[in-house]
Image 1 (cartoon, rainbow, N blue to C red):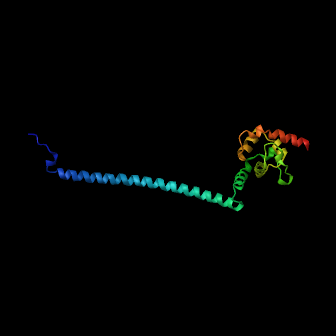
Image 2: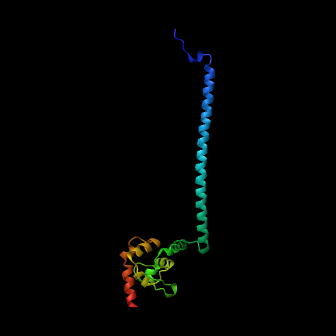
Image 3: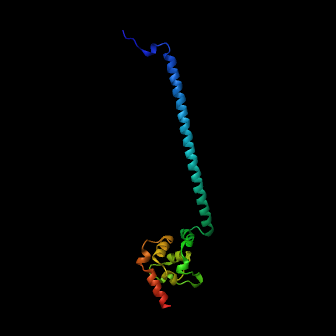
Length: 164
């Protein structure tokens, strides 16, 4: 009575073939667009990585000329930021007139080298630090936050300047 099998229609097979071809073409187009998008993203990532590698190579080249140990690397990194300090306020000094900064409690041999790397050599320079200078020097020499104030470097340096 009700025999409505769609496959019995005379053009059913042609319709199926046409739908299959449309599906294949749409799949190809969507896949192609997706692949092109992925390729562009990967090319951008590759270019970014190549720039990072080039920057690392340049940094490594600079460090390898002066030594390969960790201390030299740290001192070079600190020395590169020495221009951030306002020497017109704290004063300019050279290694020829350097004080023994290790006399100040809280400054050890390596910390003294860090201070020398940013051209801080004398008690007078430390005594002239403002709170802004303290924060800046603390950041540059990669020291524990607040440690300069807790150890009272400025006060100790001022006392040592008075004793001279």
